[in-house]
Length: 450
Image 1 (tube, helix red, strand yellow):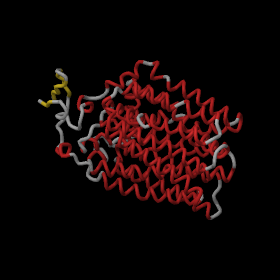
Image 2: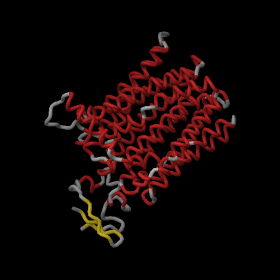
Image 3: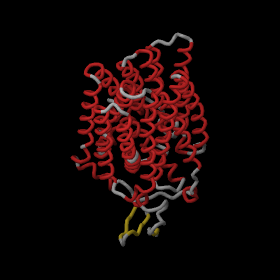
Image 4: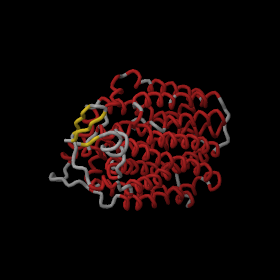
C-alpha cells in the first residue's frame, strides 16, 4: 500500500512493486515503438489517399470510392470483434509484425496487378479488404503496450498518450503531404509501391523495440485453447465495456462520429477537392493543415494536459471538430476558408485521442486490455464501413452540398452527448494519484512517498 500526501490529504493507492527499469527511465522501447507506429501509419495514409484517387481516376464514380472504403473497413470491424483473445494467445509482438507484413503484400499487389493489366475492380476490393483485416489486430497489439512502455520510461500516462497520438498525427501529416504530391508526380499506382515499402520497415522495427518485453509475448495459460475458452475470453472484454458507463458512452458516441469522419475523408473531401478545388494538391494541403495542427494539439496536451480537467476540454474540442468543416465546405468553393477551419479543428482534434486513451488505460486492467481495446475498436467502427458507402451514394443522389449539411447536422447531435449525459463527467475521476501528479514519479512535485 502506498500513501501519497497531497494538499494536506492522505491518499491511499493499491500498488505493485515498482520495477527497477521504471526507476531508471528506459525510454528506448517507447521511442522505438513510436517510430514503428509512425512508419506504419504513414503507409496507411498513403494507401487511403492513393486508392480513392485511383478509383476516381479510373471510374469517375464517388459510389465506387464508397464501395472500396466499405470493403476496406468492414474487415477492420470483423477482426476487432473477435481478435482480442487471439492477440493474447499469439502475442502482441508477433501479431503486430505479421499485420504489417501482410498489409505490405496486399498493398504491393494492387499496382503490380495494374501494371500487368489484369486488375479488376473486384480484385481491388478484395486486396483492400485484406489490408483492413490485418490492420486492426496490429494497431491494437501496439496500442495496448503503451501503459507498460510509459511505466518503463518513467513517464506519466497522459504524456505518453500525447506522444503516441502525436506520432500518429505526425505520420498522418507526413503521409498526407507526401501523398498529394506523389500522386500528382508519380501516379497513384507508384505511390502504393512506396506504401508497401513502409510496412516492410515498420515490422522489424517494432519487433526490435519490444524484444524481451514480457507484456509483448504470448500469455501463458493453464487452460488449453478451445472454442469455449475463446468465447469466454472474448465475452469478458465486452462485459467490461457494457458494465462501465463511461467506456460505453465513449463507444456509442465515437461509433457515430467515426462513421461520419470516414464519409468525410474517403468520399466528401476528395470529391470536394476534385470538383471545387485544385485536385490532389489541395487535398494533400488540406490534410496537411489538419495534420500539423492536430500534431500540435496532441503534443501540447501531452505536455500540459494533466493541469486541466478532462471533461470540459474534451467536450469543447469535440464540438469544434464536428460541424464547422461541413458547413464551410458546403458554402464555399475556395481553398482558404476550408484550410483555416481544418487547421482550427486539427488543434481541437489533437487533444481527443490522448484523453480517450488515458481514460481507457486507467479504467481497464492490464490483463484485459487486448480484449477490451479490441471490443471498443469493434464497437466504435461498427458503422464506419457504412460511412463512405452512404456518403458516396448520397453525393450521387442529392449532390455534394446537401450531403455535407446533412452529415454535419448529425455530427453536431452526436457531439452534444458529453454535455447532456452525466456519465461523461467521470473522465475527471478515472486517474490515479500517480498519473495525475506533476512529474513522472510519485515522489516528485510535492508528493511524498511514505
